[in-house]
Image (cartoon, rainbow, N blue to C red; front, side):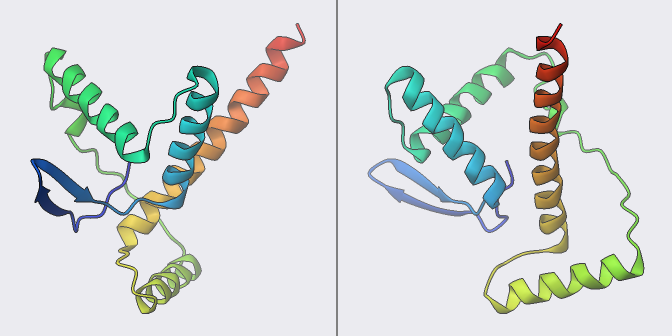
Length: 135
């Protein structure tokens, strides 16, 4: 999940709150998961509750791994952009900044990557289902 580097924390009755900005695709994914979960389990969990579960589960998984920091070892990738795409991207970032969004080029590109991953996951799943369900 992408989160804003401007993490804000406040303490209130031994509850720590982290304000995070996530991209629309991730928010939509969380919403869909919660909707399906509500239908299947007849249980409604708040976004905050769902995220707390995710954090607790990850802490547990990490404590059981031999290499708990393994997934955080960064991998650098190179993205080649044409001059036209670079100019459009710069224009988009400036547009967002005028609307008081704290967006960096890196964050916008990560958002594009996540949206593409979601689209391809759905497309691939449908394609696999159509190929193997007809046999």
